[in-house]
Length: 309
Image 1 (tube, rainbow, N blue to C red):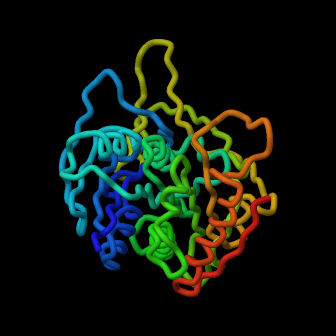
Image 2: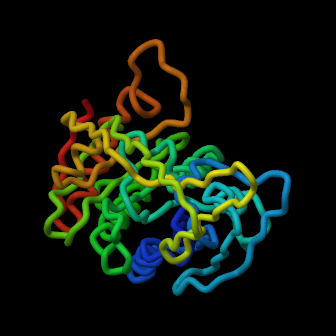
Image 3: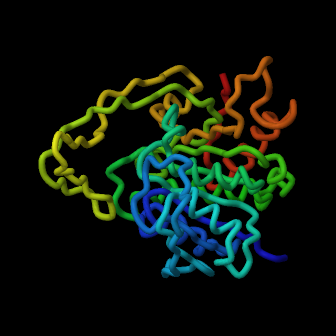
């Protein structure tokens, strides 16, 4: 049986530990062919931005275990767009795209700003099923920090590919036109309660702009805040301020704060529906999603709860 082809991308940069940990786990389990195409450096908060009006640079880079891997001097969406539509891969047909594992959650309204979700959304726009995966820990700096999230991600990948008992590959077709957004709590595997089918909440971080007067050192790989010295110009850094929580039971933020890995289907449309509709494509898709996650939960004795409120 021919192995399924997976494309991995992210917004933290191709050398980020979350991406590296996920690729390593996929290679260790050896059930798929892994290719990687991600930004050459930090691109968090770039949403679905793409590069127009200038060339998009791309170069090969070693990601251990990947069949082919490329770094793109552009956004997360650029990386996926180039991988799926450009000439860089020997075979640009992929069964599934996974964006992540991101450093920090992408719950609630963060999905609007997220480059992680933007990369997955670009795949969905082109008809390729996709997952966006994030770890609720902005301090996660090593591959070991992403061990539990990698286990959950690979379990979900196997489920949607029909590689777990009780699943079949037909779910991939059901995922066309939507993104599965996954957020995993920080901590060891045994501390996570399991999977929770959640709705998108309204949690949001408000900015706390800080005026800067000199170059500000940032995390490795991040763009340094630049002081502009033009007359009558002030420079600011957009830093995280107050958090508006959404602890409504069933919301993604609530699920993660309660110790669950939240699983939330996101659509491509932004209009307000005139009547209540199912999250996915048909009346029984929610039931099928519940069955899929239940099968996934059996892998490694993960727990599973469903609640879309």
